Structures are given as structure tokens and as C-alpha cells.
Length: 237
Length: 267
Ligand SMILES: Nc1ncnc2c1ncn2[C@@H]1O[C@H](COP(=O)(O)OP(=O)(O)OP(=O)(O)O)[C@@H](O)[C@H]1O
Ligand SMILES: [Mg+2]
Image (cartoon, rainbow over all chains, first blue to last red; front, side):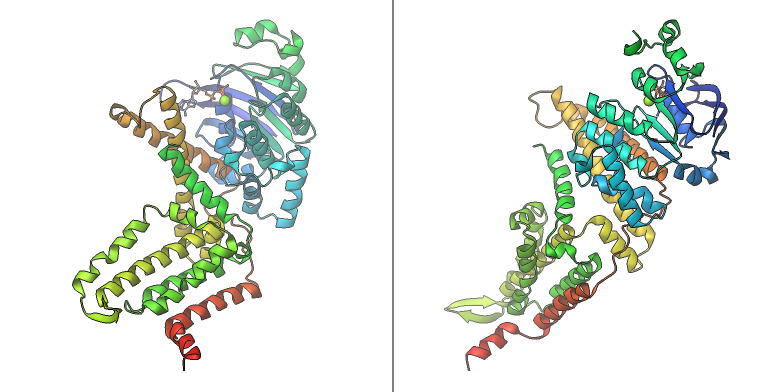
């Protein structure tokens, strides 16, 4: 379902942020993308959604990521941004949840049902009619995840979904993510969360794939993780 | 609160007012837009010397304030920069037009005085009608209504995105302002030496944010046509609402109600 081939990218001329990245993943695969700050995780995600003009080739659902295929690819992919302030732009949480379904022409009744289901699943029904500028950072994070889930995407790309969440909300997000059948790519510095939600881990180091394999193996390789500026997950220490 | 924060707040407060739940809020955006436009056109078209007829028009904003429960104070506060200008417009009329129009207990009322008065009133009325429109219709619904009467999509989208962009800009300004003052305690305003970098940063940051927001919109299927709420179908009551008010405005304009009422009682 995901094919990334020889992808490179540099923001400014000169220093490359992604070097020759290649990997493939099957349908429904659950991938954790880890690496130190600045390793290039967010950049790789942006490339997959065609937000930056990378070199190389990426195919999602068998379709190449190109200008003219973006709308198809984006309609089947849900991307939770690292910064939820950037994700939410409507006055109320509800309006934001309505935005994508309206764009894709879903019926209002269907959308309403989905909204209620997602809010219930995340246990944030009380946020429905709240103003985006009047909810806390963590609540906004939960809302920004809800916004993505209404579209019932086939592939979910989440950039630090549990950063700034309290333990209970972190747990809710993990449970919600695990209840979905969709394939997923999750970045996080919360390696315990990666352990619980992903079977496969890709470890990035300075824009290169340092390791790619089964989650339990990589997440227990102390030497490898430390070489890449990370530490063993708490639960493995 | 700081000036910037207050500006952010002002804008958001309008959003909140507009999402209210009064009976007026439930009429369709198009009905309210029509009423507002007709109201303003009617108010402006009164002759400068027809003060008594014009005064009847106060009934509309008065009613809406009453029904929606929007405090008149809020209106005065939001309009604090514009109101003085409006009141200023007619200030010189009394100097130019000194014809005596009527005498009230020895006081000579000149044409200039009356026209100054009507001009101020017209300004006040138009402002309050626009304010009440903004306070009872959400910007998205207003844009949807504009699309319905075939306003070009370009213009409507521009209006909407400008509105959103201004709030992003103010937001960034408020965050930077806070960060600045946390590290420059006791300073009033931003020191001149930092203006250049402050505004440069502000511009860059708000571009960045606007860019991110735009990306976030595109990721969720935005392709240049804003997905407004399913355009509400105008119902009978919307027509009644609009027709009722328009009838009233026309009456005010062409029938001198105060005089009529007076005749009714004094034969
Ligand atoms: N807009 C930009 N312009 C120039 N360079 C950038 C930009 N965004 C990121 N970079 C650089 O690209 C590199 C990778 O950034 P990226 O955001 O992908 O890192 P990341 O792995 O997501 O890190 P983090 O864990 O901190 O989120 C960093 O060295 C960063 O300095
Ligand atoms: Mg990142």
C-alpha cells in the first residue's frame, strides 16, 4: 500500500534533510517512525502527502503521489499535524469536523452520525461545540485527531499524536488508534506508545533509514537506539 | 489586557455573538442580509430634512437588540473608533445652511441643524444595522448567502480567507507580544529598537501559519471552493421576516407615521 523509492529532499539548497529513503509496506501495516529531533520524520510525512516537492517516487494505494493525484490520495489518508493549532482553523470543533466531509460531498446526516461516533470513541463529546481558541492544548490535540477520524481514512499518518496529552488522554488515543483497521504511520518520541500501537519500526537518523524491522527487536536494541540519540522505552528498561 | 489581545478578543467575540441562539439567529442568512441592505438603502435615501420620518427607523435596530439580547454597550464598544467619525460628518452643516426651518419656544432651528442631526442618525443607523448583521450571521453563512445570490466565488472566498487571515495575524501578534513582555518586564509597548524585527517576524510567522492552515485545508479536500454548510433552504418564515421588515421600512419612508398617528388622535 505504501511504496517509497529513493526519496530525497532538502529545504534550502545544500543540506539534505532526507537522503535516499526507500521502504514498502503492505495494506493495514502498522508502522512506527522514530528518530531524534530533526531526524526528518515530519518531512518524510509531508512528502508522502505531496506537501513538499521531493525527488524520487512515492506511491500510496498504488497511485503515484503527483500533483494531479493529490486529491485522491488525500481523500483516503488522514494526517494529524504535529501542531494542532495549524490543523484547526474553524471557529468550533464541530465546524472543523464538518470541513472535510463537506468538501468530499458526504451527506450531512451521515457526517453527523460519524461525528458523534468519533467523539464518543475518544470520549470527548463535551468538546463538540466548544471554540477552538477556548480549549486546552491537549483537548485541541484530541479534537484534531477526531477531525481526521471522521473521514474514516484507509491510511492514518500521525505526527506526535500523544505529545502534550495527559496519561488518560494518551491512553484514549492509543485505544482509539488500536481500534481502527486502517494502516498507520505514527511518529513519536513516546516509544512505549509506539510499542503498543505498531508492529514495525523504521528508525531515521539524520535523514537516513538506520534500521527497519519488527518493533520488539528495534525497540529493545539499546545500542542502536542510543547511537541514534534515543533511549530504550521505559517499559523495557 | 493589551491592545493586541483586545483586538483578537473583539474578533472572536463577534464570532461568538454570531453563533448565538436567539430567534433572530434562526432566520436564514439571506433574509437577514436582504433586510440589512434594504434598511441601509432606505435610511440613506431619507431627505436630510425629514428627521421625524427617519426617527421611526430606529425601531428596527431597537427590536433586534431587544430580541437577541446583545447588549447595546457591546455595540458602542466595538464601534468606538468608527462612531466618532460618523458623528463628525455633519458637524459643519449648521454653518452652511442657516435657513430657519421652525421655531421651538423662541429657539430657531435652522436647516443645517436638522440636516446635521439626520446625517448623524443615518450614520448611527447604518452602523448598527451592519453590526447587527455581523452579530447574528456567522461569516460562513454570510458567505454561503452571498454565493447563493451569485456573488463570484473569488470575491466571497477572498472575504472569508481575509477574515480568517486577520485572526491568524492577530493571534501570532498576541503570542509574540506576550513572549516579548515576559522577557521585557515593566516595559510599555514594544521598544522602537525592536519594531523592525518584531514586525518582520510577525509577517514571516503569520505567512507560515497561513501556509500551514492552507495546507491543512488542502489535506482535507479544499480545492478552491469553500464547503459552506448545506445552503439552508429559505422557508416561509424567512420570507415573512424579510417582507415584514421591508414593508415597515417602505412605510417609514413614504408615509409619515408620526404625523399620521398625530392626526389619528388630534382632529
Ligand atoms: N521549513 C523548514 N525550512 C528549513 N529547514 C527545515 C524546515 N523544517 C524543518 N527543517 C529542517 O529539516 C530537518 C528535519 O526536520 P523535521 O521536522 O522533519 O524533523 P523531525 O524528525 O520531525 O523532528 P521532531 O522530532 O523535532 O519533530 C531539521 O534539521 C530541520 O532543521
Ligand atoms: Mg516532527
